[in-house]
Image (cartoon, rainbow, N blue to C red):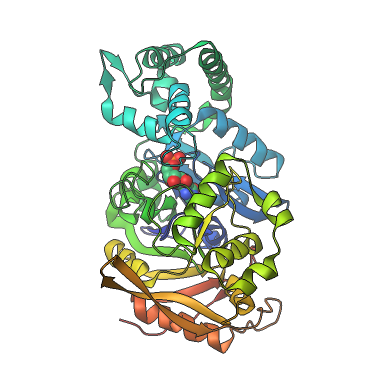
Length: 463
Ligand code: IMP
């Protein structure tokens, strides 16, 4: 930590989640002292490449594999105690010891067993992750129902574990989600409750009752990187209700859910990916194959069709050769591995949507961009037109907004092992035109899943 006051930066995804935020956090972590989460819970699935192989993070910040870094889970997060305990143990087995460096706000709200049961029973229309996130935030806002407290915070667990468990029990009995506990749900509930008790023994020592934890550190020079979960297009208010998550996902919320005064804010970093994806239901104007793709992916999720089944029965080259949007989307999904980290669900695939990015950059005051998966754009050279299509504008027409596609030359696969790194001229042309179009400098591009597969980019002097 440096002398004098520190600062904080906020990193958020600008599309529908899964933009590769964790990979960028992992790359940037050396520039910070603390990596902090401020929203969401076990619905986030962050994958990082580590010296011990790939690690999957859900609630723990992505700096877990940087031994000297402090990790903080802010009060805006909802905590699944059982999953968090399992994650802490798994990380420890993978060489990331969190003792003495993970701190969790005592104000975090506990995801109760009834929330998980309610979400599993009722989340299908939205295509939620089934982690109880929506019901948990709903009960937080409700506070009390028929004389029964609906929310349990970690501080309630700290104060009196038995009482907190009784509150969860009472909230389950009078729950507001119309979930009736029949024999099988009752058995599931009892099991979830028992595992919450034993998991609490693991989690308890990481909970901090110091509301000034982060501000104290920053006043003493610490540099904080806030890591957003989900993405700004899934914000509970700014996204497309009801097909959103239940928390605020924009960078401003880091200073509510992250327990730090906003006076320490330095910059906001936006993460994109060059081939866009969305899981679950909801509007996705740039989707390749439109409604057909949305239907296909929803059915595939219901029927348990994932990566292996698609790979087995699909001839990728034939799909690209057809040039049909639905086929190209499927081909891109298979080649770029776009399946849910937790669920394995096939993700819906779409084109880079510049008007959408321009809007979220302006709305959230994004200062700089990283664009992941730029290497994936080379797959467009398999299509008959051999161009990279990008949505440049939307024009109003009789049937609503119509996307206007700009076409850029394709480029050969990038050799990320070459030194110095070179970016093909046609990719550079595309990146410059993205900067101009969305009004924000690009500072780095991802060209593969590994830590080293990243190229820094000198932004042009836009705006
Ligand atoms: P929930 O957050 O589980 O309630 O799910 C609400 C919507 O957000 C669904 O469409 C989910 O697929 C989506 N969602 C939640 N978490 C993530 C994520 O980490 N990446 C991408 N989509 C997500």
